[in-house]
Amino acid sequence: ADDAVDRVFVRDNITNLLPGMETEGVDDAAVTLIVSGDAPAGSDDRFECGAWACRGASTYPDFTVVDMAVPSNAVLSTLLDARASWTPGLRENSWKHVWVMTVEASDTQLDNDALLAELATIATGETGFIIHAVVLETAAAPDDAGYAGLATQTGGAYSHGDYNLADFQDPMIERIQSTALACAFDIPPPPKGLVFARDEVNVTYEDALGPLTIGYVESAADCPGAGDAWYYDDPVDPSTILMCPGSCARFEAGVEASVEIEFGCATIPAA
Image (cartoon, rainbow, N blue to C red; front, side, top):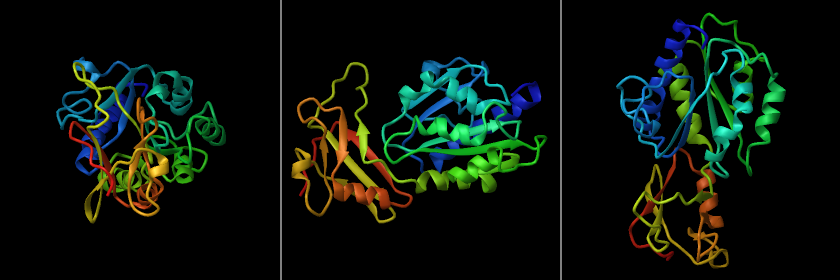
């Protein structure tokens, strides 16, 4: 945003999003927030009272703040120019949701086809980028050449004039929940002072029917012909948790489902 009024609009609306996502059931996300200088100092760059105001702190474990100027007429092109600062935090084989909050109806530096082509070079596997946008009401009317068109093309949510629950947040959260769950999960580094124990990891899948513990097998060759199981990419020195075909199919078909990787309790083997 380019002036004080616009910056307040952007600031206040970002404040609403992260607590809203967490309270509405988006339990696991890696978040990168790109903002210029407005963030108050806080421990490890996390906003301890929501994004700016005290509306509930974000509890996502993977939370990164990138402090850089983002011109209002070049939001996505600037994002692409700065990819080295945020792509390392992307999860493999996961959907990437980009939320644009701006006072301009489009990115004037790159057209939509060019933007989508650039984003496609960053996507991995069968996943991609979904663009969501809120544009201030003083901007030009929405059209297919701007953020409204990008949201339509990628299946994202769009709101012109204000951030509100019915028109933007609820559709955005529904879109996040409806994208297929990943079938591979990187093992994060353990907290300071602790070590990773390969025999103390469990996977729990939950949907409308309730929680389901996914049992462990030693390798892909041990995956059951039918049923659920997971395995490590390397059983001796693992870096990734992989779903067997049966569980992967379940994850991809899940609606409003979530996966939790639990550390610290004895691994439960597949039945």
